[in-house]
Image (cartoon, rainbow, N blue to C red; front, side, top):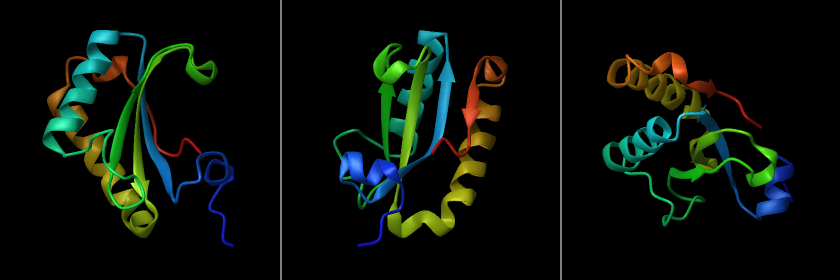
Length: 110
């Protein structure tokens, strides 16, 4: 059995978080989450094994201390993950330019 990472064992999933966007500003991270959900079609209700998905995390969950948006990439898209990371980052810079510096973008969280 091929295992992509330790999170495969924990979540029994064949998708990985490929970008994590964090901020201590709840309103900003909520707007980012809503933007990703609406414009890119990512939702928490979709199957992360076959679709890109997105989830908003509150501080205190799994020892995080900020508000976070986690975007998961299905395994069959791993080779294109860098392309999508660059696109998400570029669009965040464009659409959230006044608040971009308040965001922490982790391009390889796991």
